[in-house]
Image (cartoon, rainbow, N blue to C red; front, side, top):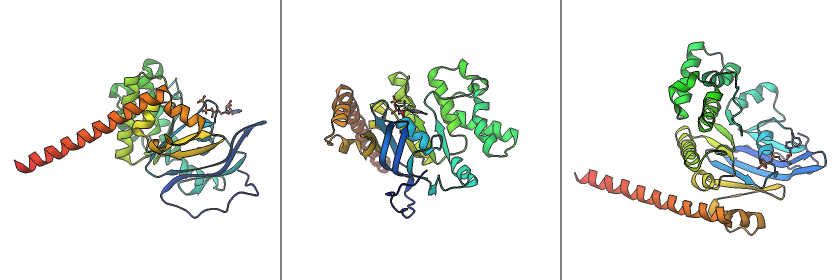
Length: 290
Ligand SMILES: Nc1ncnc2c1ncn2[C@@H]1O[C@H](COP(=O)(O)OP(=O)(O)OP(=O)(O)O)[C@@H](O)[C@H]1O
């Protein structure tokens, strides 16, 4: 990336930050998508990224993973400045993340197990049988039956294809998981189940999750913070705090009809969590008494 004259001095490394973006500018021809965009993604958080169509959510994700080169600014992933890094350093960081692209992007000529083994073959020298074992583990982690291993993507439902793509994203035991519209095209029940799976994986694997989404339910139920792309920059905060921000797009998005429905779901989710907590506390007391 080209450093601009006004680019800030490099900040001290911060272990609590998984991804640090500073002064990002993205331009295609005369179309400026991002300008002066700053973002910190904290280690271990689920960050939801939203914004109107064409505001550059997917482009931002692709810039962070190095598929698109910004016009200016810096991107640091796991403490490595991706532009200044040499090829070996970049590869070392790349194998610490997994990506699930918008349409799954599975290789149609390969089985699910072969798809999962693509990153394993690229980044490791594991034996064939070890890779077969790992593919089976990842298939189970993504909530698929083991019979999915030998199936081709065309033989799977949309929801199963997404799980297969998630299994591939998990192949290298990533620290960061990038998800581009993971629940797009799923029915509400399928989407909720997928959200739950991501939340469960995040908790058990302590993942940092960067998730581009339009799904307000996902945002309110599994995201710790939400990054909103507006005016070529990012406003990032918790759902509750974003509700208070006086910006027309943010107001419309979070307080429109879908936003209100998600708010109700959020309140119910919070109630459910409190009920579950109090049930657990009751069970403890009963357990202690008996
Ligand atoms: N490789 C590219 N070359 C030129 N323009 C591009 C390229 N990739 C994206 N764009 C443009 O950049 C803008 C942002 O695209 P992006 O796909 O990031 O939008 P988005 O916010 O993810 O939108 P949506 O919610 O509709 O998926 C769009 O106007 C798009 O046409």
